Image (tube, rainbow, N blue to C red; front, side):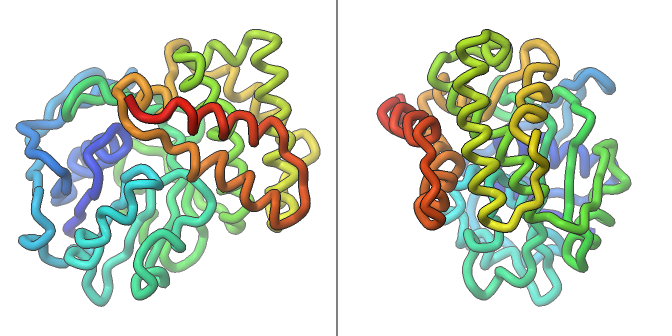
Amino acid sequence: MTVAVVGAGAVGCTLAVALVEAGVDVVLCARSPLDAVTLTDDDHGTRTHRIPVATDPAEARPVDHVVLATKIHQTGSVWPWLHALTGPDTVIVAAQNGVDHADRVPDALQNRVAPALVYVNAERTGPGEVRARRTERELVLADDPAGRTAAELFSPTWLRVEMVPDLRSAAWRKLLTNVAANPITALTTRRVEVLREPAVAELALAALRETAAVGRAEGADLPDDAAEDTLRWLQDLPAGSTSSMLQDRLAGRPLEADGLTGAVVRLAGRHGIDVPASRMLLALTAAVGPG
């Protein structure tokens, strides 16, 4: 079994270590070399692995699985990796946010994408260094042929793998956790505890209700209390939990707002749904910009 993890950020490094510790042959595909990957979590403590790192897609060869672990807006830049690493039977595990995983890869590869919803709260603390906070849900996959192949890959790891028959609905539930926590933590430069403050919680709930309405219009099966349940889940996250967008802002990197809140705003327009809270959060995060 050979696996290439494309993207050496917090999620990519976490998934790479989990696979290595399950005995899988892993290569990390990154922009720059890394001497090693160090992961710290509450269950296993701190450990360091020397994982092979590739930096040139021209030297890559097809593997059994590709784990796509970049941010949404970075996907186009790694297409050369996807073409080089993908053979006739390769499955691409898209471990990304959002609800349109397959649409982001080249057309010829879309039929082999297994969307993966990652719930582990992973924080990049330095090059190749990650702090992972475990949650009650960790990795959600579709109960279909591609999803079952991805589950076979990750089931031997310490990640809890969950299969669901309706990934569309599951992806919208995951998007709910992102459209509130990501922009609000990035804008306030505070961790998820900020969502416990009444005024901030009110704004988060407005954005969550809008997102749930758009998700239902898109065919997602979301319960009436999906927004309220998501806010409670976010408020109960372990102390110190962060968001990928907050990490990106603090590091001066571009924000993933267009792929998250932007998707909600665009789809809302398709269905004629007014989403003022989401439009406001999108405008503010766009105004922040990198740096």
